[in-house]
Image (cartoon, rainbow, N blue to C red; front, side):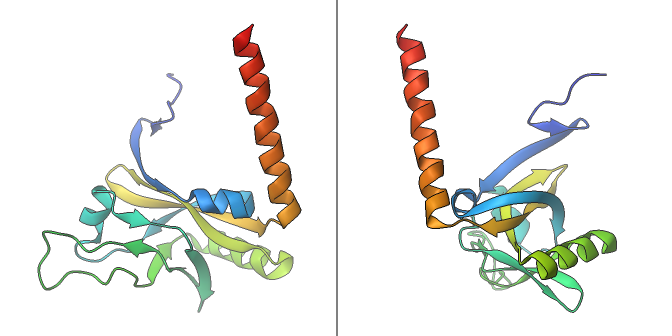
Length: 160
């Protein structure tokens, strides 16, 4: 059986549309979950063109459902008067047991649900949702220092 490449899982092609790099800087990711997104009208066309911004977005639990808030999907350029609202709240599609697990972790440990990545998998838009804990300022400094040390080591190794 062939090993799946980073661009495919179980022979289903994946096209990464956007990555929330700010989330990796501000949070430590404890667990990730793949969720579908309930979209309307021209949103999927805009996503396929890559007009999405996840910076500053988050997910909330409301009435036993998980909603994506503050994510910007630009209006479709070739749309008509029925175009979608760019900043509307979107329902995330998860199994009930996954929702219950996430709700329990968020309530008990004080974690946050942050969208990390938006990609197209088999023609459908999927969101990688991370169960995250906020970093302190000193954690960010440690991460920057560690990255600089790795960069210096690689530079030395390439020089030899």
